Image 1 (spheres, rainbow, N blue to C red):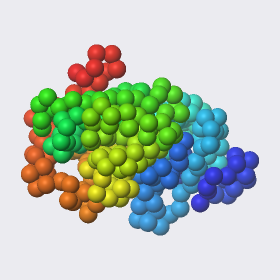
Image 2 (image 1 turned 180 degrees about the horizontal axis):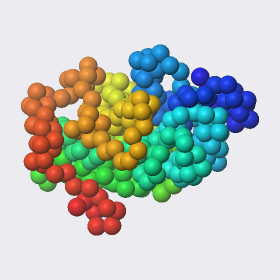
Image 3 (image 1 turned 60 degrees about the horizontal axis):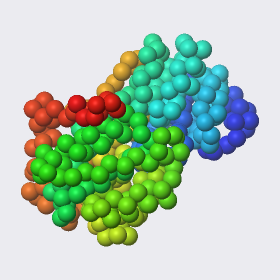
Image 4 (image 1 turned 135 degrees about the vertical axis):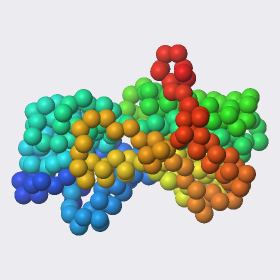
Length: 321
């Protein structure tokens, strides 16, 4: 499998490797981010195990490589080509237009082309349930939320978290801080730890990190302070056993596995009902989640799936709506 090779080396390898094989392009942070990228990689690995077929992969090191990698995969016959992360939308769009006979998929953004499948998530449904758990576990009645780049999908996470917290415990306060406004906001663990410490100083005793590898700094700080953290995307409960209340699973693995199995052009929305969003419960947080807390979350999950609870989103202008 292709790893972090230079693009020049890739060109020679792709001549023979890329014939009709699916390709996966990871965003900055790569497949070892213990979060978004790792989940996508796990989906590709599951497809590989089930089919016995190989796939191609590439971890970009800078923004310029997004379109370069996508185009070279297309030139060498890879199909489908899956871009993991909204920053890859423009490169997927450009290359998909140039290669209408190839199939593409994008995770976390919509590219409205006839040969592209766009996967989006109802993140707010999972963070609603996480907010419920956080409010029930909190002793101070104050929670924290650390987001990565200030974009709509992270605002959806925050919006759901706030709603869930107040659903379980009216009057709960939620401190929301975004790390930045550029892609660099996803890869700054030191800044994440700083924000977490600041929120803790204001009384937050449960903090959710939705910030890529920046979130690893958040969760480390939470552990060091003896507070509770909530992970995101992959199951991060094992990072700090006994200090991770849960993780909001954003199943990018489901999206990648579906795309590898056969691209279906159009928009595919994944939430609780479709198994694209969930919470992580395992041996690492078993002592933190009481049966009463679990029953409350399970009841809310059923109500969301049935439409009895409508989790609002954030349009970035007027807040949760």
